[in-house]
Image (tube, rainbow, N blue to C red; front, top):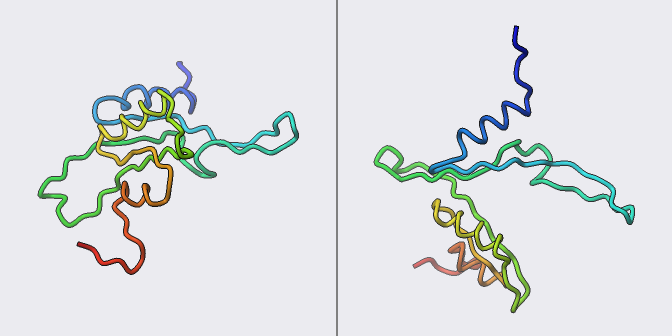
Length: 125
């Protein structure tokens, strides 16, 4: 009798089988460790976040009119004059290609423009 696959094996299979075409999935390891200076370093999105995170490209059809659809957002924050690495640019490009919002931002104002946000009290067009 064959043993059942482990949670890790199932996760890998799902990631590889489903993370293609209009979907991308990434393993999200979360946790904490103590670095060489004795500081606690947390990693991953947040406590309780899913094992696999990702993006799914959706085309809005008549069936979706009136519904809210979540759109992935990725903002790479840099100091003025700073530049995104090739890997960071590739990630931002992928998010955009799949219908998400992604950009390098150096200020709150840039982020507001990218996100189409207006300061409180400013009328919408």
